[in-house]
Image 1 (cartoon, rainbow, N blue to C red):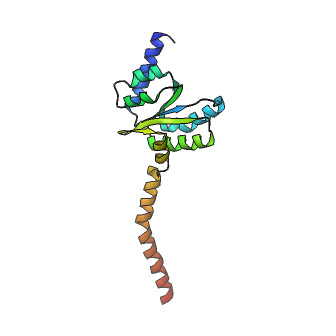
Image 2: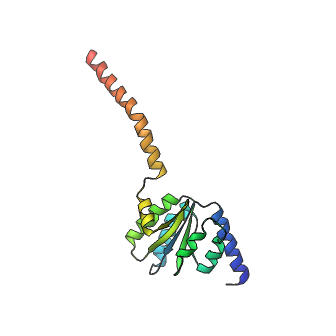
Image 3: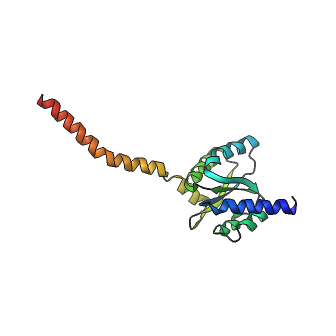
Length: 159
């Protein structure tokens, strides 16, 4: 890779990091190209970038950002997911790692916390924003629907 290509890659990584809310590091040893493409396809709507990167270049890209502690996780050949929806990415990575033992979730950073693999797996078990909204909507609608059912039954008895 030439020097100008390296600087372009670093600037592309930095621009992806500017609107990210999480960065996740995985080791992808032993995955086939088809399996890697499957993971990319699942992650595509949730990340601004998912790429196998050279550790040294990624460390240079995150050096002056809030994601700088992630560089300590990069010791072997790794892939990086720069997330725009970090919680959803944890769910996809956990599900994929369960189905493909060749992939290792190393860790990541989300909000203010540096996460290890166990932290990412615990986060993946939390409900998503859509699930929480659905639960709240159900809680708000339930009393009204019960009242309507009781009123309808009461009206049938009177007739």
